Structure formats: C-alpha cells, structure tokens
Length: 329
Image 1 (cartoon, helix red, strand yellow):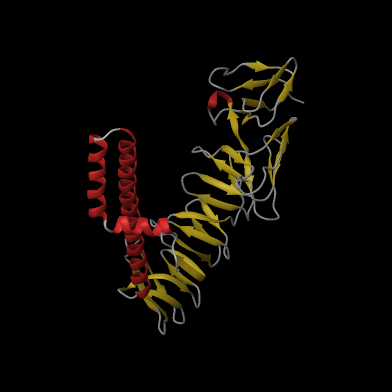
Image 2 (tube, helix red, strand yellow; image 1 turned 120 degrees about the vertical axis):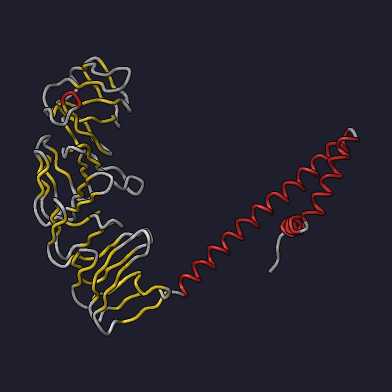
C-alpha cells in the first residue's frame, strides 16, 4: 500500500512528536531572533510542525477510542449465546435499569447474556407467554435503550389504552406503554380516533393515521391521510397536527383550509388559549404569500385562521390580535 508523500511526512512528524516539537521550538526561536524572509519562513514552518503534532494527536486519540469501542463490542458479542429452552423457564431480568419477570415456555429460542442467564436480548416465543406483565407472542426484544418491543397476544388494556392483539407494542423500562395499535375507538374531547390507529404515548400522546385509513377532523372540517399525525395536549384536547412527519424525505403535502394552503402542520387555537374554551380556529405560519383586501401577508407570517368569517388574526409578538379582513373564502 502506497501513501502520498505529504501523508508519509505527517505520519513521521506526528509519530516522533518529541523531536518535532523540539524542531518547532528552534524554528520559533529563529523567528524571534531573525528578521525578514527568514523570520517569516521559520514562523510558518514552526506552526506547520505544531499543527502536524496536534492533528496526529487528535487522530491517535480518536483511533484509540474507536479500537476500545470495537473491543468492547466484540467482548459483548462473545458473551451472547443463542439457546432453545427444553423446559418452561422463569426469567428475572434484573439488568439495570430494567426489572421484569416472566416465564418463557419450552421451545422458546433465546439469546442469553452468558454472564447472566437472567438477562436476554431477544426471544422467539414458541407459544404465548406473559413477561413484564404483558402477554406476548412471536418475537420479543429488549433493545439497547432498555425498551421492550414485540407482538401482543390478544387485545389487552394498559391504563386507559386498549391495544390490539397481533399488533406491535413497545414498553419502557418502567413497563409503561409507549406505543401500540388501538383495539377500540378512542374519544378525545370532540374527536374520535378509530380502532387501528397507531398510538404513541411518550412525552405527549400522538395518533398516526394508518395505511389505508383517513381521519376526519370534525371541528375544522379537514381530512388527514396515512402517516399524518395528531398530537393531544395535557388536557386531552387536540394540540397540533403534523401533515408531513417525514419532511426531510419527501415534499410537503398541501391541505387547503378556507383557501389557505397548509403545508407542514398547524396548531388548534382555543379562545383565551384555554383548551376548555371553544375552538376558534387554527394557528399556522404561512408558507405562501396570502392576498387580502388591500394587503398581502408574506411567507412566514404567523396567523390564526378562524372557523368562520373572512378576517384572520395576526399572531406574532409584534402584531398579536390584529385583524386582517378579506383574506378567507
């Protein structure tokens, strides 16, 4: 294998860094004592030598960390062992921060941690099994973040959520539900989310329209298509809607609301900013110029589009609550 001459010189200067630093110091001394072209060349060469040593040190440190990470990964891989259970086996998974127990049936294929047979990475269940308080079937996995992910065996209820059997579900390391497929219609204030929608309940509750499904937002008269997302606020009312959750991978869909094209998403606007009060419209940032009577609102203007009337309300800090007539159909 051949290297460019500059790379070979860099390797030599970096590897023998004590000599390189001494040379850099001598050149710096010459630059201080001499004048003219000699000073300039000595100063440049001194800086180049110091830069070589610094970059080589950074490269060497990064390489050392990469080798250490690779060694740790290979050591962990050597501790993995795949076995098939010949008897029903009680598993008490005590790997921090997770603490979950259950019985894996005979015939289950498990990938153990060989240091502790009470910890497994995944299991292919031979028959339905209850683990961490959930009845699972098929493939059950404990991923690197400590989450449980698998297929539910039969419809099951977790708190206020009714989850569909045969659908994928995920639980955090406190065994709290993170996501599943709805087994029953869910009512949120004046909106119904049908069975079959994907529920995700982490930092806030959201519902995703499934493939082949639609969601009619009854209060504002808009219909969402697959993959579009509705978020609930803390009070259980609709807080916001995302029209394109994959905004970096495909162009935004355009959904018209009273003649205004909606692009990436919008928020519900309630009277006095209180979800317990009546819904008055939606908050949106304009992605196109909007022509009103005697005025054009530019792209980026923050507005509230009302449910009725032809006037919208400006919603930016400097123009809050200002009415602009003749904008809406």
